[in-house]
Image (tube, rainbow, N blue to C red; front, side, top):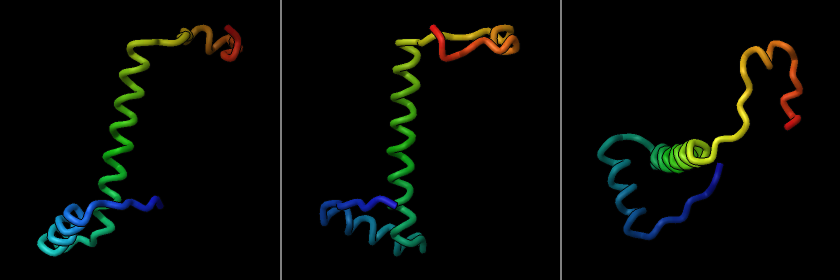
Length: 70
């Protein structure tokens, strides 16, 4: 698991959130990491939409076409 360092203000907010919700602070650290991963996935998806690569038809795949060529 990655370590995250936040400003003291953010740490205080996380402490307060953990207290009022009953969730451990680590739960929110994990939620933040998951959010970052989601943003990375969105960025990658948008990049691939803007710059699509080679696509294969189901027929090419069924015939065993070498997908690494091209």
